[in-house]
Amino acid sequence: MDLVRVSECGELAQARTGASVDARRAVFYGACGLAFAISMGLTVAACLSMSAMGEMPMPGGHTMSMMWLPVCGQTWPAVAASFVGMWIAMMVAMMLPAAAPALWRYGEALRKAGHKRVAMQTWLAALAYFAVWAALGLAVFALGAALAMLEMRIPAVSRAIPVVGGAVVLLAGALQMSSLKAHYLHCCRREPDCGRAVLRSRAAAALRYGSRLGLHCCFCCAGLTAVLVVAGVMNPLAMAAVTAAITLERLTRDGRFVARSIGLVVVGIGLLMIVRAAGLI
Image (cartoon, rainbow, N blue to C red; front, side):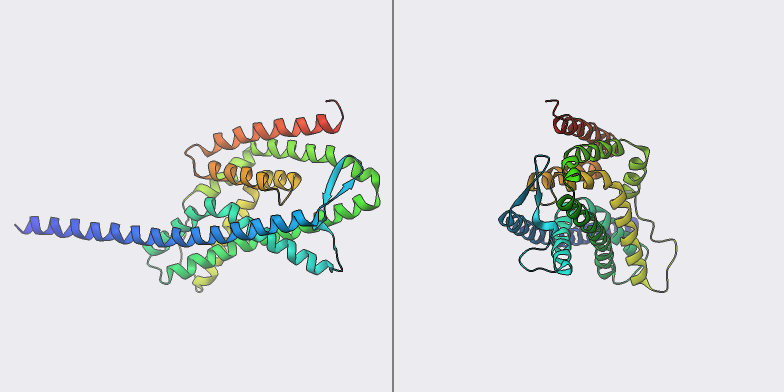
């Protein structure tokens, strides 16, 4: 009789634990869904704003977005802040579907290790994660603005842009199929190791984890990010395609195979862009 009661108590405790995990998961992914919806709305608004600004025809048969240059009396810091703000909104919408499971596993690992204030630490990790993407956005703006200035001043640079863009896409596809990509994809997919040591500052530990995850994701997604920049940072179709690609390679069972398949498609697109830019078709 005592054994039966112990068994029943164990089953009841297990059921309560399972219900508690399900409730936490629902709250976490509900918050992520809300953040995703808000970032999507901001991204759509930014796309409409960029469309209203128009594009400038350039030598070489392509157009250049005015998002890279000051217009209507803007200063360079204002243009950079506007771009980084749009970049952050876009990256939350693009990366959250792939990053959310890793952040959830991190929080659960902290809970199992006996940490307190797990929710706060998890959101600090998310903040650090997207801070890394914001820093990348600032670097992308600096590079894009410098290239835009060169295009404005040197027509030969503008004429070379279509071929250079195709070459960048081609190299991005090759990177997708490389061992370096496979390494960082594994880093992004593996379980977090957060229970080996308790740091003096748990907030610092969360920020460190989020920063490391963000760096791994930036390296992992370098090729696809380059494709997005070439296709147009605020191009809705390009954003949707890159988001789908990142999510599939991150969450499917055989992510490496998916990444290589995507790489083959990207290589084909890059070759087609180069052939068209060279006027062969």
